Length: 350
Image (cartoon, rainbow, N blue to C red; front, side, top):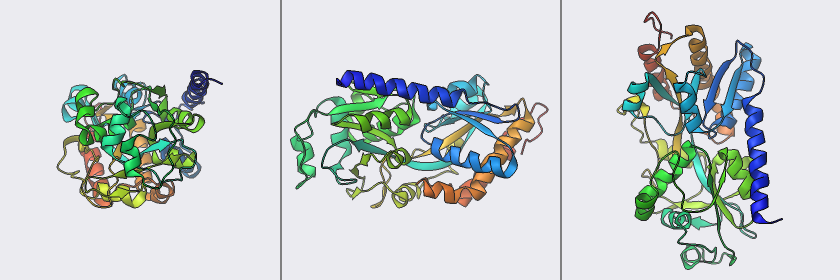
């Protein structure tokens, strides 16, 4: 099968998966959310357990951060989710508030015969040059120099990126913009960027499926997707010049210095943080809600779900290699709920 046919096949499968998520039966009493694919594995796990314990359900559409922002602005869901935080001005303009729910890491993933899990070493400069089309073969001198003793094929590199508006893309492109000046100038950082080359996959699911199926590929996904699909992830060189593996402790190290209390709208970006153990593409995933809740009871139920998740979901998050929000940050978030979320009469929802 030719590579284009494989890509079309994977794309069709991904679209089908997304539609199944989007049209699953919803009870009138269920909470509805839509957005980032980055946190979908942990939201699904939390929702399953919460339903068993409380009888209250969550229908979450894993459609990408861009789609989640559009849906919450259109008031078609109870909350949106994005891995790219909205700025204070964007929140104010749309009458929204946001809070971080979970943290995790984005990882480069590859499909190369003979390369072991976590063996390949890359830098932001090199990954940026690959995505710019400047490095086109796996045995290019820039990659070989980082990986003495690793047998690298002479194959062409097939670049895989997101086809939809994505917070994962924001984190990945923000990191590359910090590590590679030319990438910053030519591509930049955003939820959707104009990629110079490559093939697109819808959602973390689509990128993971494409990389897994096609030899010679490189892509980027949230860490849980790499583990779940048994895709080879790489090491990365961090800001302190250390090559690190993606893992729970590395994500925690990157988040250690986050200035949540000092950042309007909690809009903290955790890419390329200092620290010898820090994973350089770490980020938070945010929940976005309208400040004035048209259905105060539904809004309160959303907050009850995330309150439960903060209190009882840490072990489940750790199992999937996400980083739970620290207790002081949870306190800040809950104070923001009390101060910012009101019903139509101005009464606090929480």
